[in-house]
Image (tube, rainbow, N blue to C red):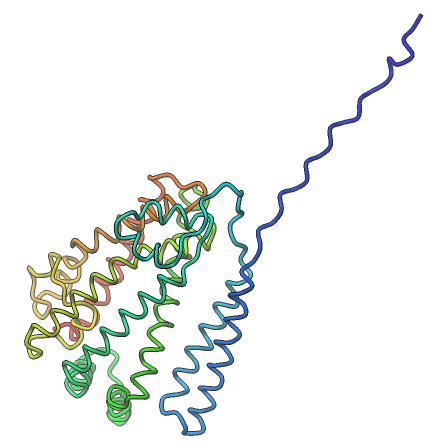
Length: 333
């Protein structure tokens, strides 16, 4: 006698639901709108002659708002639920100096970058304000335009005088110096965003896996210790050293002499000076931090890929710096 259930087939197991998509950082979108509107108001105030230098500052803020709004559509990395809770901004700012691996691992699930951005932007703005105050606006502007006259991008004489007067007012007027500090924050953000894109694409090219926000946060926190050490030490040297012995252009970046650039006079060997300046303690420290950050912040980034991306970016920066030093050698002489 045949089994009546021989044609019975058990139902297939239920299909697991697709993984939920990670959210987008909508709070960033709200901030970008505020920044863009603020930029428009500053532009209008500048055009109405209420705020000197307003159009340039407003345009910078509008650009910042547009970039931030575009980034707000990039999804955050997925959170599994078993990760360490997010560290506070203060914990990450301090911890990246003595336990960077833990900070970068925390960024894998919680890629928050605002604290690092504010610290970098603040130390940069404070040092520049002190630098201008110490050397004097007149000396900095006179030296810059004197070297500009010897460069291949020399503007016509009438425009040169107008630009020089505008630059002098920008360095002397308190309201314009505040705007310069504000624009420096925009510069820090845009530069870090550009480097983060290169890191993101570089990790993918090396076969790794990293979310853009993870790369973005890792870039900020890898720059943070280098920026703080550079500007704090430079600030001390600024008030110890005779202002007449400080270069009005090179000194704006750093006064720390921790690299092989001390072996060459920039006026005599600008190309060799630029090449040698890349080989220094802080330079290699930043290289190591970037590799450590990418390896720990990404979902799947081995040490080889992280170091490959970091070294590639270091070489690119070295090439670009050497080209600029060769083409515009008058500025560092």
